[in-house]
Length: 291
Length: 348
Image (cartoon, each protein chain N blue to C red):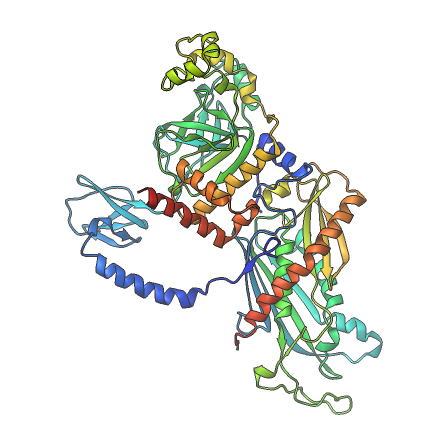
C-alpha cells in the first residue's frame, strides 16, 4: 500500500494551513472541491453496466454490473431475505488482500447500503425467477488510504448505466414452470434505475483537521488529518452508514458533534452537484451501443 | 458547478491513435532524409551499421550493428554515439543541486532518495555540524545522527561525486544547503529540469524556490534575515547614496559581507540549521505557495521545461483565476502552458 512520509516541518506546515480559519489546501482547492476526474461508462462488452473512473494522479477504479437469471427458492416466509441475496458485491483493491479487514469492511458496508437502494422488485422476473446482480469492483491503483470515494463513484455510475433485457415470456409461472424468454432487441431493454425514485448511494470520505472538513483528501492531507468521516448520501439525504475512520496512523483525536454536523452539511451541499455531473456522463455514454 | 467537481470523458484512444499514427508516419517519412541526426529512436531500433562509432549510453551492439536500448534522441560527440532518453529516472552528475528525502540512517551515512536509480549517500563527514565547528566527526556525532537528520526529512544538497555503480554521494557543506523548512514540496519529472548556474531563485510574492535538478522542487517562504545584512556594494551605488546616504554611512562596508562564505559559518549555523520548526507563515504566503505549486504542476503537465522565468510567467498567467484550485483542471493547465510559450515567442 502507498505510504507517504513527510518531514516534521512539512507536516506542521500542512497541518497549520489546513487548520486555520480560512484553510488553504496544498493544491489550493476549496474545502468542498474534488480533484479533477475522468470517467466513462457502458464500455465493457458483456456486462449490463460498467464504469471506469480515473483521477489525475493515476488512481483508477473499474466497476461492472452483470445480471444473471437465477431461480428463486419458493419459500414465502423468507422472500424478503431472498431478495437481499440477489446482490453480490465483490471487491478487489490492488495491494490489499481480499480477506483483509479494510477490504471486507468496505465491501460489507457497500453491500449493506446498496441492498436498501436498489429497486429489488425490478429484479424479480417471475414467480420462480429473478435477476441476480453481480457487482465487481476493481481498484487498479490508488494513492489514498481509504479509496472509498473513488470506488463508490464508480459503483454509482455502473449501476446507473445498468440495463436489463426485456422479458417477453409470461410473468405468471406459478402453476406451470417456464423458462423466461427475453427480447433480442437491446433497444427495448430497461434501465435498472430508469423510472425509479431510488438512486444508488454515494459514499464520501472527508478528512477532519481541527474544525475544518475537507472532501476528497489527497494523500498528504490524509496523513496530517486528525480523523476521517465516511458519510453516505442518497436521494438528497444523508443516510446510514455514517462512521468515523482513521486516515492517518497518528494524531487521532476524538471527534465532536460540531465536526459531524459540518461534514453532514458539506456532503448534503455537494451531493446533488456530484450526482448531477455523474448522471450527465451516464446519459452521454448510454447512447453507445454495446453487445 | 465546476468549482466543486469536474468530470470529463477520457479521450477515445482508439479513434485518435489511428489518425495520429498515420499522420506521424507521414511526417517521419518526410523528415527522415533531412535531419537524420536529430531523429527520435525507439528501443531496438537500428541506429547505424557503421562500426566506426563508439557505443555510449542507451545503445547496444549486436552482429556489428548498433541499436538503441531506450526511446530518445541520438547524440553524437566526436565518435561517441549515445541515445539520450526522453523520460526515465534522474541520472546524477557531479555538481548538481538536488533536493532529497532521507530514507535511512545508516552507519556514518544517511541514505537519501533523490529520484535516481539508487538512493544517494550523504556521509556524516559531508555535513556541517551545528555551531559550525570544524573538526573530525567523532563517535558521539555518529550516535546523534538522528538529531541532525532523520527519516523523512527533506534537504537540499550538491552531488559531490558519483560512485562506480552510478549512485551519488552528496554534501551539504555550504550554508545554502541543508534541511528544508517553511514550505511545500512538489515533484516533477527530472527530464523537465534544465541544468543551470543557479537553482535557488527568489520569486515575486516573497517566495523562494529551489528547483532540484532531480525534479524535486521546494517552494518556501523567503527568509529576510540574510537580506538585511546585504549591503548595496555594487551596481546602483550612486543612486543609493543619494536616496539613503545616512543609512549607507552608518553601515560601513566590511570585506566578504553579503556573500555566503565560510567565515560566517560559526554565526549562522547554530542548532537552528537542523530545526524542525517552521517560522510563522502568513495566510497570504501560504496561498501564494499553493499557487506556485499548481503553476509548476501545470508546466509539468504541458511538458514544458521548468525554469525560473517560466514559473513567473505561469504565475502571472494564473492570476486570471482567482481560485488557484481551478488550475488543477486539465484545460486550464493547457491554456496556462500555451500562455507561457506565447510569451516566450513574443519576446523572441
